Amino acid sequence: MRLGFLARRTAVARLVCPWPLPRPALHVRGLAAAQRDLVADVAQRMVKRRERLLSAPTDGDASQQIKLLEPLFRAYTAWNEARELYKTTAHMAENDPDKDMRELAALELEAHQEAADSLRDEVKKQILQTQSPIVTTGAIIEIKQGVGGQESTIFAGEMLRMYTKYCESRMLQAQDAGDMTAMGATWRTELLSQSLVDVSSSGNISEGIREAILQVHGHDAYDALRFEAGVHRVQRIPTTQNLGKLQTSTIAILVMPVQAETTTADDIVDPADVKIETMRSRGAGGQHVNRTESAVRLTHTPTGISVSMQESRSQHQNRARAWEVLRARLLDRKMRADAESNRALRRSQVASADRSERVRTYNFPQDRVTDHRVGISLSGITQIMDGDDGGGAGLTYLIQELQEREAERQLEGLLEEYADE
Image (cartoon, rainbow, N blue to C red):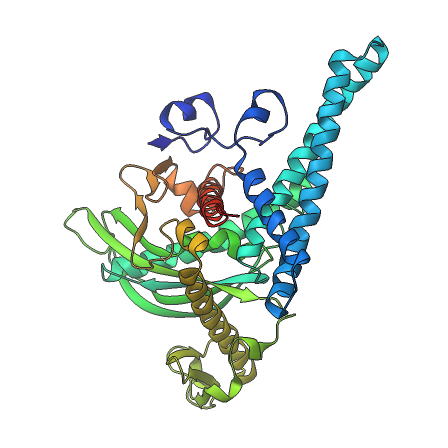
């Protein structure tokens, strides 16, 4: 299946896409009201669990569950009220004996419909939030060279550039539209470290990247970018060889959450468990290199996870960045362990848990980017690699499809979990 870069949501796109394209969800009007609403089914069961917990003797665990379900209860109550208001207004628009009242009610229907849709989205958000209550303020993206030698390092550098420019593009689009609630509206990137390598390309010496760590600040960054984790594959004729043969190379991408400042560092990592070492920097950097011990390495003794940072001339800054990455790796480890023990979360994984799994292919001769998890191919590879989102028709389209599919699987898992309640 292949979608044109600037025509994702057109009739042409519908001809090549085997499922309905995303559309505003309204579950209170017309035939849709009679259809099964997964969000309503799950919310109703979760609210009933809250009622049972309230009516029974509570212990510490029950109190915590009640607190976790409280935002969902409020959103669900408001949604029910909005649906009832819509139904009442719709009935008035059709049956009121006063013509003026019928016309007035008909005019109000659209506003009530939008309100109901918005509250349904909030209910869905609160349902999913109960499964992952950790509040994140950003994401850390690690890009690592894979199979393919020099071509892999070149691709790693291109992907670092793509993510950096994509995040900037999302922020600028939101600002131009005046919509600071849009995905990426508050994103800001910070390159924490990169390991460069010289590459011979078509007779010239350029730089590739063996490994890079990019931090994306923004409350919704992790929720969107976590789907980038996995093995990314590039297919093209490398500039590093003269044979003119198509080559397949790979890179590995890890995406980890950055936790909100309201959570203390000790909740994730005990400083007493971390070995701190300082050393002289290695690599490019002029006379400063090897003169001061500005490089920092942190090793978490219980897990063996190690983080080295030497990008800055300041040991203090390198230390702060190393702690940020270490906490992110340990939080990611904890969230994965929690997902393994949670049936609904485990069911919802959209091929994103296995970091060794191929998630996307970038085929330059065919001018396509294919996401293997959702079976969608986009054309316009040059624009995509340049971070140009095409007004939501590029990488954003893939991210939203992945988010929607994971949410649906997670809701199905929750419905199964609450089946006996």
